[in-house]
Length: 103
Image (cartoon, rainbow, N blue to C red; front, side, top):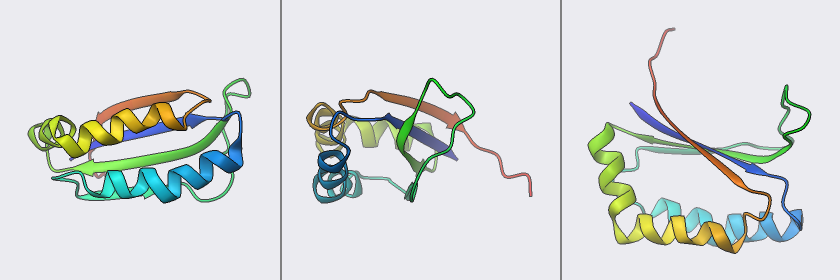
C-alpha cells in the first residue's frame, strides 16, 4: 500500500481553514481516481515537536505507486493540489510512504 500523509500547519484563520477543508477540499479529494481510503484527524493534533503545531492530518491510501501517480496526474488530482493555495496558510508537509501491516 502507498499512503500519502499530509500535515497542515496552524492557519492564519483556523475557522476559515476548517470550513474550506470540509466544504471544498474534501469533495475534491474524494473525486480523485484510484483512491482506496481517505482519513482525517478529528480534534486536536498532539505533536512531540512543540515548535511545529499541526491543525490537521490527512491520510490517503492507494494500492501502489502507479495508482498514486495516476491519481495525482489526473485533472481531479491537479485540482486538489491547486486548491491547497486557497486555504493552507499555515503550510503543508506531504509525506509519501510504503506501508506495511505488522499486526
